[in-house]
Image: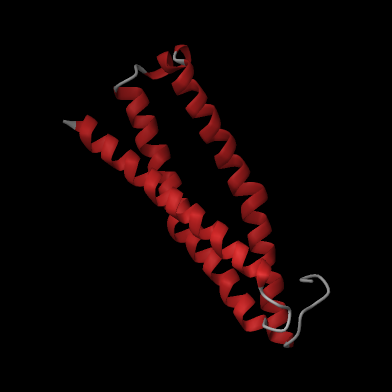
Length: 130
């Protein structure tokens, strides 16, 4: 009975994370097309990136992590997943993306948000933000 629930939670996590990443990508694309004269719009787009990332990507990744571990332990026999190339590959890919997403990407957007906040307080685009 737990397998269908775990599978549902896993797919829900995948959906949330995918939707969030599409939202982050599209909003980042829009922010790169904004002219420097429209700082409030740029600030709003940077805020939306944070909302997509923190509101969808992170919860989706945590659901994937939790349900994936539980599925591996209950369905695939724990460490026996190492003998299944497709599952070992998925675990390795998830670990790589989780580390990369929470270090490089997240730090970039946190810095961008901080620089945008300073620019909005000054009322003009700062040299660092440019």
